[in-house]
Length: 109
Image 1 (cartoon, helix red, strand yellow):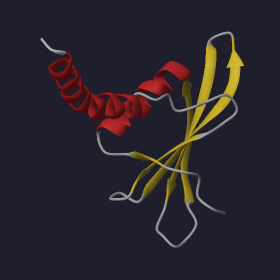
Image 2: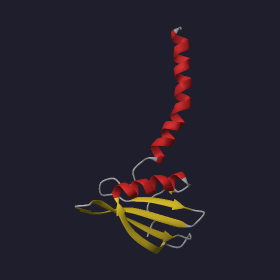
Image 3: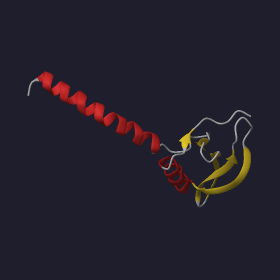
Image 4: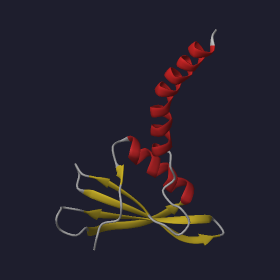
């Protein structure tokens, strides 16, 4: 195989794999970074969810899930709040993105 053919084949493989790698990275990105909140929005259901870091205990790291009803242009209205262990929150984050929730910035207050 000549170098030009190898280079062309490599570019073709990269072009096919890159979108899959980017999509996988986005959907499996953890909800929280140190000291930051993660936000997901579902425009069809007019819902907004905030994942925020909670306290560490002997049982593990807790994450607080806050749900808001969001009808634009009005500010989000709190609906519910609960806490879950971090590994469960990461799983919830990933599953929500798989069913259509999108990552977003915090709403302007």
